[in-house]
Structures are given as C-alpha cells and as structure tokens.
Length: 246
Ligand code: NDP
Image (tube, rainbow, N blue to C red; front, side, top):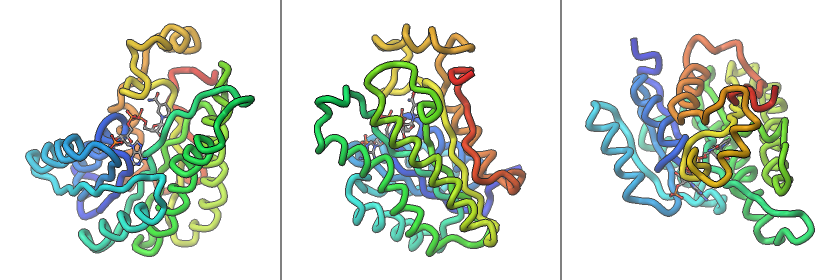
C-alpha cells in the first residue's frame, strides 16, 4: 500500500545523491514531491522525469540553499503547486572541511547558510503550509556525535546545530502532532563522498559494517519517518551509520 498517498513533500538538494533517492522513494510511496537544486537543472529534471514516468507527481525548483530568500520562495512555490506541504526534508548540505586556523570566514558563513540557516528558513516557511500531523526530517550526520578525523570541526558544528534544533522544534510542534527528526548517516556512497574515493580507506576503518551506505537505505529510513507508523518518533537524532559511532 502507498503509505504517503495524498501527501505532498519538498526535498531540498535532490538532483542527485541522498536527496534524489529520498525524492524517488517518497514518490513511490504516493507523495507528490517538489525537489530543489542549485546548479544541476538537467539532473533535477531527470529525477522529476523518472518519477513522472513511474506514475508519480514531481516538480523541480531552482533554489540555492545559501540564498534564504530563494529557499523561502521554493517552499512557497511547492505549497502553491500542491496546496499544502505535509513533509519537509532538509537534505541540501555541503561537506565543509579544513583546519580551523586558516578556515576562510566566507566559507564558514556559506557552510552555515546552507547546512543551518536554510533549515531554519525552510522549516519556518513550510510550517505556514503544513497541516497538523506533518513531518519535518533533516539529514544531519553521524559527525555531530563522532568526528574521528581532523579538519571536520565546521561540518560537525553545522550538523550538531540541526541535531539540537530538532529537539527544540519537536517540543514546539508536538501539540500540532508534527514530528521533527534528524537522520544521521555515516558514509553514504554519493558524489560528495564516493565509496571509491581517496578517503574511503579511512572511512572503512571506522565502520563496524565494512561498506558505505547506499542512498536508498537513507531514503527508506526517511520514508518510514514520513509515514503513518512513525507518529510517536519525535525530537530524535537517528543514526544510520554502519556502526561508525559505536
Ligand atoms: P551530494 O553532493 O551528492 O548531493 C548534494 C545535493 O544537494 C545535490 O542534489 C545538489 O544539487 C544539492 N545542493 C548542493 N548544494 C546546494 C545548494 N547550495 N543549494 C541547493 N542544493 C544544493 O551530497 P549527498 O547526497 O552526499 O549529501 C546530502 C546530505 O547528506 C547533505 O546534507 C550531507 O551533509 C548529508 N550527509 C552525507 C553523507 C555522505 O557520506 N554522503 C553522510 C552524512 C550526511 P546541485 O547539483 O544542483 O548543486
């Protein structure tokens, strides 16, 4: 049975990687899905075309997550298209790596804008269009709990911010039966972190499961949290990390 029939969702940063897998999975469960992207219109359109070809409903909206006005507008467009937003998935994010001593202030600001401020903006706008019982899901990172290598302090800061934001939001929105959760993946095989990349050997040494996650595995957890069976899970940061934090 389609668990999300009649629901509408927006997934940020979904032209590829984890976001694309989430968009496809939510659509497979019956949701109408809006995806955002910043620099890959063709790939975003390919995700939309794939969903439509399979009988689903989807649109792509250009919105750089570093541009808060664009994020707000994207959420408004999705709400206008579908009439409401039941599910917000904050996925757009950048891996911000570098040593603190010479980390450029502009890069820090950009990481904050994309990984943190855009989550605030999307949540604030989505809530204006979200019926009671809605779902807010953010893709954080296991690195908010464990940062076992050097150069990841800024990334960990941003992912820690969304983990604690999730807790406060859950308190604020419980009366509306809106759940708020933060999925914390370990290494997932995407263009941002390829399983065949130079960093893979270090990663594999840190894992209990000696492999990277597939984006589809993160999408499956997202679909569960978005679905009707997950109404009592809120304020949680849920690891899906192959034992990275164990
Ligand atoms: P990818 O780099 O593979 O994909 C990123 C997606 O986000 C693309 O669709 C890209 O679209 C979009 N995007 C990037 N920058 C922006 C922006 N400024 N505005 C809007 N969209 C943007 O990343 P992943 O799929 O690996 O990561 C997705 C999320 O998962 C991130 O939040 C990341 O921190 C998190 N994560 C990833 C892990 C991993 O190992 N891969 C592990 C833990 C967490 P476009 O091409 O148009 O820019």
